[in-house]
Length: 256
Image 1 (cartoon, rainbow, N blue to C red):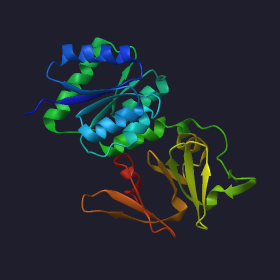
Image 2: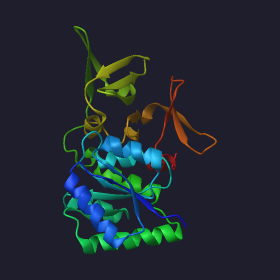
Image 3: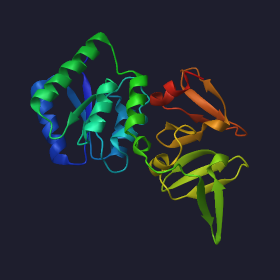
């Protein structure tokens, strides 16, 4: 049996090193294949190396730990969040059967996490996609939204400002520093609001996040398709291009 592998992602180097030392003591066989300094490095390393476990700090620059988890596609990597979040977040993890570590990480708590992961690896039981999706939905900003859902979006082109009804938006897609939105008329607009901020403002019943970089308006969903590798794609009305669905969000479509 090959040695289990892990990634640690934390933008505070001393905390990442401390966790690495603790793991070396509690689980000498575990090979740390990457120590990422931010969410972008973590996402790239997980895609390239597909470690058995990813210890993800929730609050990181580039991409948060939640956003990194949303993008995991390999069907192998188990997620352990390292968090300084409040009790609300801890309850969400417990209810969703995911594991988490509170900062500062205590040896006894880490030991329980190690035993849990070892049992999963031995029995080949993994965190379910449904559990991951449920936890992410609880922890994403819209779960704590208290203001009315966003109704209009302003998109400027030169001196002209478009006032766009969100009901006419087919989907939002992150594009480097901007977010692209496509409307039912086929028009595309660039806005500066990041995807994460949009999620916090949109109606969660109408707009579903299907990937760390994509949010769709389900009222304009035309259908879904699976390819030969069982990856799920969605088709929007009037759009030829298909949009990929991250594994964490596949369960959203099972009832459709």
